[in-house]
Amino acid sequence: MQIPQLKITFLGTGTSTGIPMIACTCAVCTSYNPKDKRLRSSILIESPATTIVIDTTPDFRTQMLRIHNARLDAVLFTHPHKDHIAGLDDIRAYNFFQQKPMDVYANALTAEALKHEFAYVFADKKYPGIPQINLHTIDETPFVIGDIPVQPFTVWHHKMPVFGYRFQKFTYITDANRIDDHVKEMIAGSEIIVLNALRREKHISHFTLGEAVALVQELKIPTAYLTHISHQLEKHDDVEKQLPPGIHLGYDGLQLLV
Ligand SMILES: [Zn+2]
Ligand SMILES: [Zn+2]
Image (tube, rainbow, N blue to C red; front, side):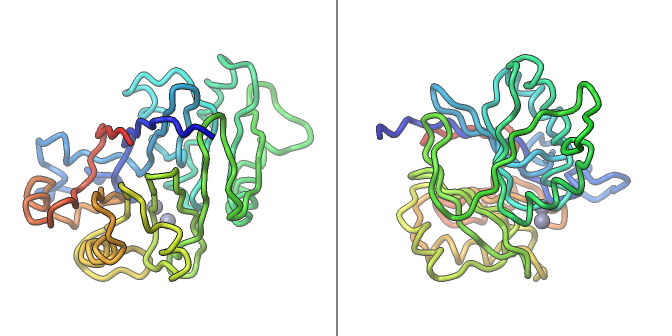
């Protein structure tokens, strides 16, 4: 299969509260730098023929409007935490314009949570105008969406299994603090990785900045962008200067070709 070039757009790079956080007056939350404004973590992946979003955050509608996205073929979920699923109802716009249900892919844990959290979507008697969803429960078997091959794999968010995704040379991992050795082998050889890095202090379910940098170096992936960032990390420009070559903080609106 011919592998298409992918355009990656960072739709959001913030932790669950977003930055600025409501009611916070810290230096990061009051920064004027647009790179310090972080919606909840999500990316868009586009080939010439196919558009995929990873997670539908509480900011999903805003994220799609601000990049003027007009087409969406599928949603890939990482895990069922609210900051990664809350925006699902807003895929209705694509249902209306594309005249078909949205293909949604999730691991078993997330699929069950979606049925619970969005019970009205899966009810026998459906209210008119609700989201139309084709829910695919997936495991770690590779599959293809349109012309984009997808390799799911499991990482650990404290005790919760979270799906990361590899798209040939590009790997996306959010909400992890531990990766099994056999999965490190699945990720090795990526040219670009996106990896979560919450803050400098230890956290029960997220990599710290130091842990994320060490992991990128261990995996020998030449280019990395860190995401799911808390206001407890300093301002973007101050942190970016201190990072080793090839490792960067992600920011909303960043685009990559891979
Ligand atoms: Zn999260
Ligand atoms: Zn989470």
